Amino acid sequence: MAVSAAAAASGAAPADFGSLGIGKTGAAQAVTLTFPADSTPASLVATTQGAAGKDFDLVAGGSCGAQVNMAAGQSCTVNVTFTPAFAGLRSGAVMAVDAEGQTLALTYVHGMGTGAQISIQSNRYFSYYGVSAEDDPFSFAMMSDGFSHPNVAVDGAGNVFVADMGIGAVREIPAGCASAACVVTILQAFNGPSALALDGAGNIFVAEVGFGDVKKIPSGCHSFSCLETVGTGFNQPYGLAVDFSGNVFVADTYNNAVKELVAEGGYTTIQTWPPALTCHGAWWSIPAATCSSPRAAISAPRSFPAPAPPSTPRCLR
Image 1 (tube, rainbow, N blue to C red):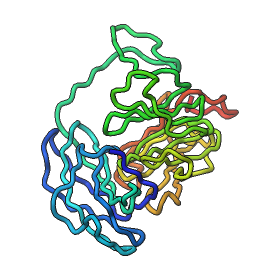
Image 2: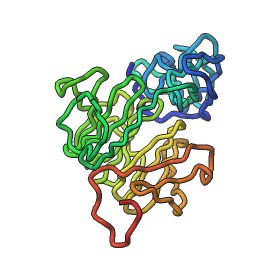
Image 3: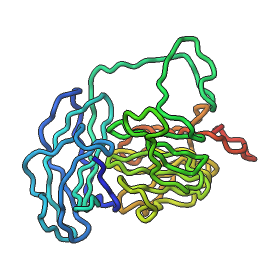
Image 4: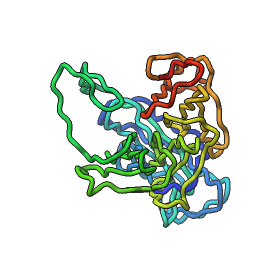
């Protein structure tokens, strides 16, 4: 289910469902929705990385409801359960939407799946152009080709989103698609889309090296009328990540910094992380202990193509 989220309407703190074994359903938890404007929801929906009917699910109860008039600043509750499908962090959102699918109120949710999960390790390594060397056999399935310097992200339904840098487009490889014939162009005419990431509601955030900004494509948006610029002033941003609260982290390459676009308040605040970054060869990382709020350690990989070396040597290379 594609849920449009044209407006950033998060008014409540993210709901934490704690840790739970894979496949187990926890007790229902009340999630608060706060409406920034007078509105009448047509429906309520819970998503996991933009996909409905996955880890987070609506259950009976709560004070929110369809066709219930809500005044600006008014809050209500929705009862939600969490059933992790995989181990690790699971992020999503609970939303009230109108008849056109536009978001009226949104609260991010997250939980942790626990349990055994297969991890396949390999001693092959990669260069900017693909596999450089390997000592063990491997196989792969070609989903689609014809992209130019692609960077990818995946939603909760298995759809793959591609920043197609060469043609300035963001494209989607739907789950199950195995050829270029079923690839969908979401939006084109970006100026060097170098990286992208999805939040729990399925909104796509795109870093543009040409304009030095970050743009947001609301879930379901396929035109420039609904495209939003959420951050500017970056110098060749080559990495992007989104946390479970919807905050966006940007690798600001030539400013030698990692910056955070704060979701609360509609991305009007940009925070610069501490300058004492740790070098790990191909990326910088910030230890979790330096975070002002509890978040996982953040790393900002640099995507191809590499920028020209700066006049002052830096570890990001």
